[in-house]
Image (cartoon, rainbow over all chains, first blue to last red; front, side):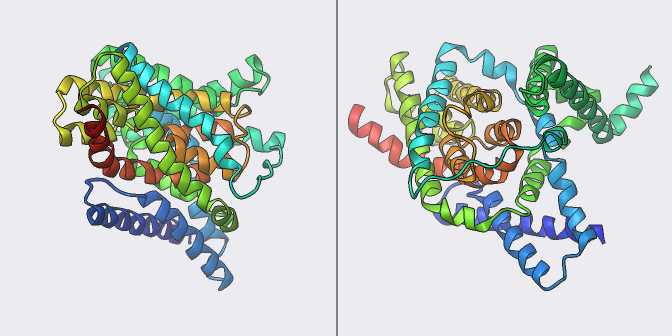
Length: 133
Length: 253
């Protein structure tokens, strides 16, 4: 049943969020620390385990894949609801501060990626993969 | 007319699906005809979204972009934190756990480095513009980390509301530029594999920016970048008002 997949996904996310909030309380900040990350690891582990036992059939999988496929449209909706006006009208200092942080961070990506051996680039996407979003 | 608007408002989420669907369609067409597929449709859709958010904000003076216009309010639910995080978690399905383990050290290091680099870069710009007291520098530096860390730090160290507003603006600029700029800088910084995506997520930290930026670059990288980025804001809220602020007090106070 498709809903089993959606429910498993929701359960992983809620569990991850609770872990993230608890971690926030433990270190004394009013923020969720890594909730989404924990939820992702949980989903990977739980789904792999269930699949091995044959308890994660195709319809269940569809429930997860549907939300995964909705990701880009959701991000587009998110972009359309950002406070762009405030970002742009913050003045030169805000713009420079944001850009400086971005530039310094981006410059470090190649440095960090070198730690522990190089990684191979992913194979080129096929035309078909590019078109389906 | 009013009747139609009323139906659209009452079924806001459904109308949001239609609106985003239309945006994706237009963007896909633009990508194919104007850039011959070189700039991905999703990248154009995200830029289009930001542009609409700008006009929505101008029109209403609100904070939620296009969603402040009543008939588009469903976009707020569709693009809100709950569904966004739900979809991000779903992208992890089928991720290679081996890749994550391999990049564990690099990912962790990128987080720490990313937070401090943003703090320092933001604080340096603040100082250059005459905000030389530790509280203002810490707040603007934290804002350069993410627009959530800025106000958290600012409130904790007692910065002025003007400085807190500036820190939010700095964080928003970063998020917006990461969304638009990631596909452009990706070839320059080797952003084409899970490991560099994890490093990128940790170094940039803005979950919304990284999530959208990687989606516009290569959607297969999204789960890796999102995984590290999700730790950033929490860690930033921890380090901003404490370690970072006290270091600034020690140096400039």
